[in-house]
Image (cartoon, rainbow, N blue to C red; front, top):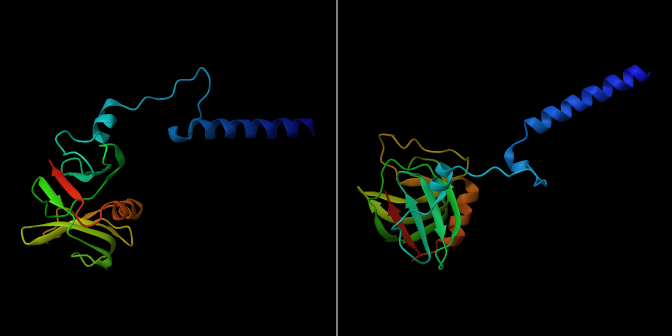
Length: 172
């Protein structure tokens, strides 16, 4: 009986070791004497608000980074997230939210929610949205689409933040 108990404890200890070794860094706890992993310089640069992206309350959309920042009146970043661009990019510049829709069918035929429109480019309306099914469009599609897609959670955050008239800065 003692041998069986010792074997069972050995298996449990091995499984606990494997679980700990494979746990993501986000689950790591602060422990005295153990340094927290530092974010890489590349990651910090990717998350940093682009230079010359305006000031005050605004949405910043970086075309090359495929990222959006929600920026407060004091220029603090309230949220940033990755997006999937549309097949039609708006030219870099300063825009304002012109209209919003709670739920519609996107130009690609996909039901979307939290639609925030800010410009028109190449005859195509451009704005942010989130697909109800979580799908992302093909930015290289032949059809002209203007929906810059995010996750539903990020789309909801943008919806609450970007009311009509809020500035949208598009940067390279």
